[in-house]
Image (tube, rainbow, N blue to C red; front, side):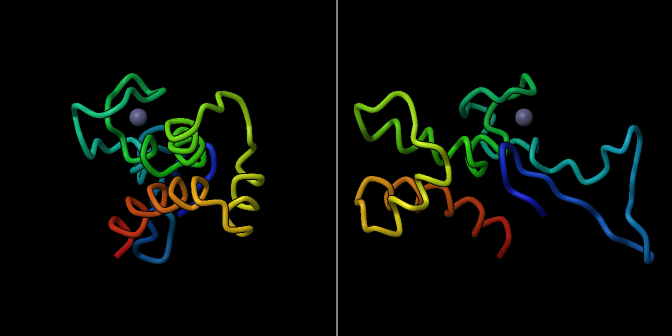
Length: 103
Ligand SMILES: [Zn+2]
């Protein structure tokens, strides 16, 4: 599993990576968690990655501040490490769907 601009996953079975049609096996980032959720770049709504990608963390931060541009994801992490309450709130919102789906 990888988390960055999206959420990428893979399926390892029978000692090999399952590739599927067009290499799309294991593309779980676009599994809808909430069909009424936010729009996703795939055209769907409420996909896992709209809640759990780095872009989602930045969206959570922007939703709780007047800031509309920046920070970068790395800067958001640094803000969280420094104890910035809004950054910690955004990072907690971001981690919740990751922890729920990975548990
Ligand atoms: Zn999607």
